[in-house]
Image (cartoon, rainbow, N blue to C red; front, side, top):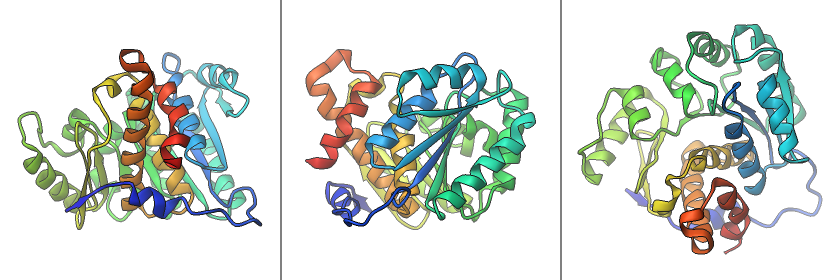
Length: 290
């Protein structure tokens, strides 16, 4: 078993070549949001930028996209012409995903699920989207998208998926309860389920557990102040940024967990009980630097 430390960050963040150009460090597509939830995709996107991705494109239902576009000039948000994601927008999602892959010469990834909601229409759209995108595109499957994929686990095997569940979402995905499990038991369960599903899982918790079914790692950065809403969205964004840069799924999951937790530690030193997800985002570059 691997205990994640700062060496993994040093391995990823090497000096950039002087002749680097746009998209060499990735283009990330963030798909999420709904009428009620607009913050999740924005937090993932901002965290991805702070983690070093070159560009993020957000695709969200219209109200969410309009709100997100007002947050920051860094954010490009494409509005879907509906109140929540459904199959009506499937052709737009597929076209934008293919476009991102072509523009970035394959250096692309997707973060899917934050704020989408769990209506039947939305879950069907998520499943159809995942069935039709190119199988070599890495996807961070988070939040509401986990519920959708749990309905068709046969879709997972052999795909470049990274699941980022908390303990209840892990139960939804696998049927395995972790409520009273010790850390040692959690490690065994996560590894067994990752092997069974043939995927990579990053179980969020006091100690994060990362496994691809063959190797398992634990991360112990972070703190109790990170229970605030949005810190899972920042994790998904960081992982997406690393995948878009071409980092391996298992390595990206480890580095994402470490970096998100370390940024949370640094932000908590200043804000304590007042910590917000946006505070964590601003600490990401310092966590990388140190």
